Length: 132
Image: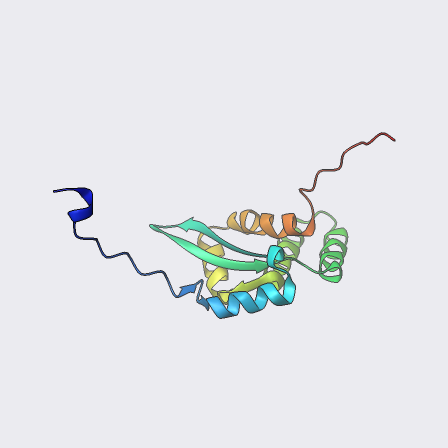
């Protein structure tokens, strides 16, 4: 019997949602914000992975975040609140209450989950010295 004679195994079905959002919703967000400005991500939580979808912050949203950081007098609570607010503003799915429940269980996850938002804002872009 050759490989061609083997019965084909059924392929697992593709998921119809990611973080509770449909493919159509994700496509709409990509059209609205830019395909490269919407990210589908996941983070390990317990025995599984929590999926979430974020978008890049606008200039005004990022400036508001920086303003809140500047007003914080380096108070950890205020910086953490500003970080959570920026993430919540850029969160497309799931609902923010789902994420807040995870933050209660894993408090440091706020910073980890906000890192991709900051990258979408441009914090990881390389600036190079050029010659002319």
